[in-house]
Length: 371
Image 1 (cartoon, rainbow, N blue to C red):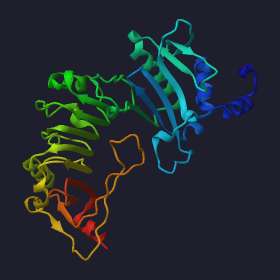
Image 2: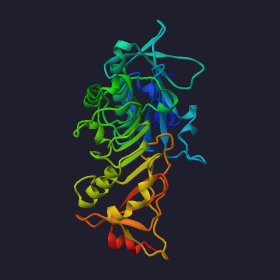
Image 3: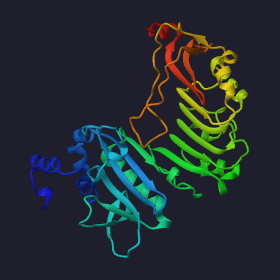
Image 4: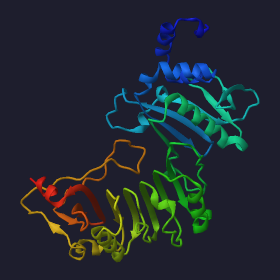
């Protein structure tokens, strides 16, 4: 069937009934076909909430998903609920000589076709890996536009303890979620700093710290991430929080200095630091007896014990396996106030954890929510 021979109305009707992977594959045929698809499907493409790159470092395979606003969420709102029907493309390391070529943004891309898959599979050779990802992503921007979210995720540091350097291609308009072990090569701060200096600012970072390390540069791009989650299960954690500039921070550790925790709250209260902070969680397994005494030293205020305080909860920024999961709810009678703008943060302390939730409210507005 030669699509161009049909009237415009018929062309649109045919394209309207094609699935996204088929439209994407067809868009590689020619520039004119790409323009036709982009123009005729503009309204339909607006329902795409985001395009997700899920990169597996083990075999170098990247599965590209589209998340559609019209698809209902599952009972548990899990990202793992995505099926093959949500796949847009696979990008794999080339292992065979036989291939078919399509041109994407001036770059010849090798495609593999199989009856086993409902979506196109693009291939790359290691020496040209980044160029292939850039060309395919630029093609996505041409077809779907830059108004939707593009996320790059390489999950799974809980599933492996091997050292590896994450693959972070330089892609436009993409938010990167990075997971990595600080061990071996990265136990040298110079290598760690060099990696982040050469990479785009990450949206989310998950670190599993296995060795003591020297201090990071206060101006490191590491601290500019929106959300950082750090686990230090075997060592005494140093003050990773001090220079953080983002929105959400979580630390699971064996030990944490009391002075660091007090300094964090006081610097937030004075307006000296953490202006963008929305949520912080510090979980301390050992040497945590000071937690229940810290309220007096950070100058908390209290809501009347007979009244019900509001509950602070946000979308969880650093666990990308659960897109709609929220932070641990904070319902506390204790709060602190920032001097510069009268903003309130709820403070909650349990046996092993310290929770800090910042409200977009002044103290007067916050107290109006108390029941």
